[in-house]
Amino acid sequence: MNLQLSVLQREHLQWVRQNFPQEDLGDAIFGAVEEIGELAHHYLKRKQGIRGTHEYHSEEMGDAVADCVIFMATVCDHLGLDYGVLVQQTWEKVRERDWVKDPENAGQGS
Image (cartoon, rainbow, N blue to C red; front, side, top):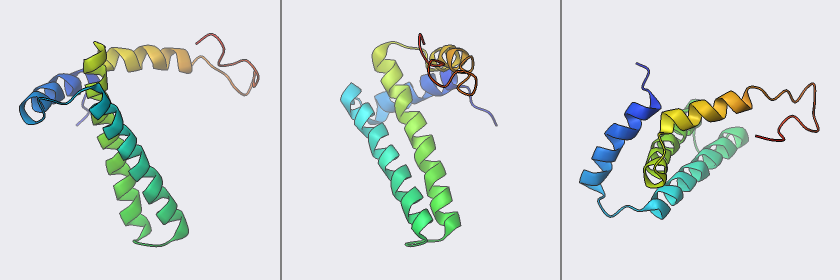
């Protein structure tokens, strides 16, 4: 199954309103940051070969990425942005950058 970000955002908003009606923008941002921390934690432990198997840490890293995406849906809600449209528009800018051809200026302007 391939879930579109705009659909995720709408479904997640209903879930948040039911489960965490007081959640604000800061809660969503810090939730995403916490998940990035978990991603970093499992990356480091996987690299060090400690506190679990390579597969375990890879699975946990995937979970952290997905949780971060979900928290960002709430950020978009608070900012009045359509998550799918935002990512599509930003990707259109990013994919035009060619850091191999222009390593100094490829990202300027967008």
